[in-house]
Amino acid sequence: MFFLMWLGFTSTFQWQEMVAGGTVTLIIAIFTSSWFTRMGLRFLSPVRIFFIFKFLFVFLAELVKSNLNVAKIVLHPRLPIQPGIVKFTTTLKSDMAKMLLANSITLTPGTLTVDIVEDTYYIHWLEVSTSSPEESYKAIGEKFEKLLKDVFE
Image (cartoon, rainbow, N blue to C red):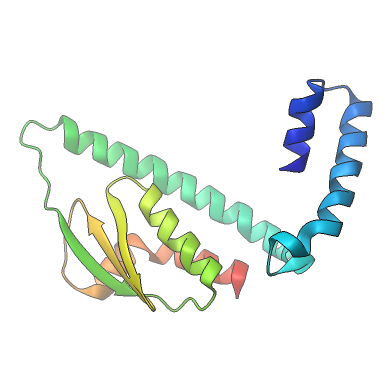
């Protein structure tokens, strides 16, 4: 974030400016990381960074698929929806992981996280295909939760 701000303020992409900006922002990030996160610098391990990029790739793929599905529903003449609220339980322990799971579900079109009570998520789903919590979990949250476990636990 600091580096993006640096680029915005300098408005240049010369290699000297990029190296200076990268160095300055890295030093600032190292000294202030404990102020902004609970995890500090241990969050920056190479394995976690790999899983963060993997999570982002899976999230973007799900985002595209959901957008296409909702567009198909909206453009269909009969508007074939079966809205409802489903619930499932997560095994995530970290508050950050739970928050990211809820936001990932909400940002994916066709689903909206309505409430979280301890480990139970209540999701408004545009196309309820099952009332089983296990099946709802598999359709909505399983892909995200597996990757979030790799990052946060």
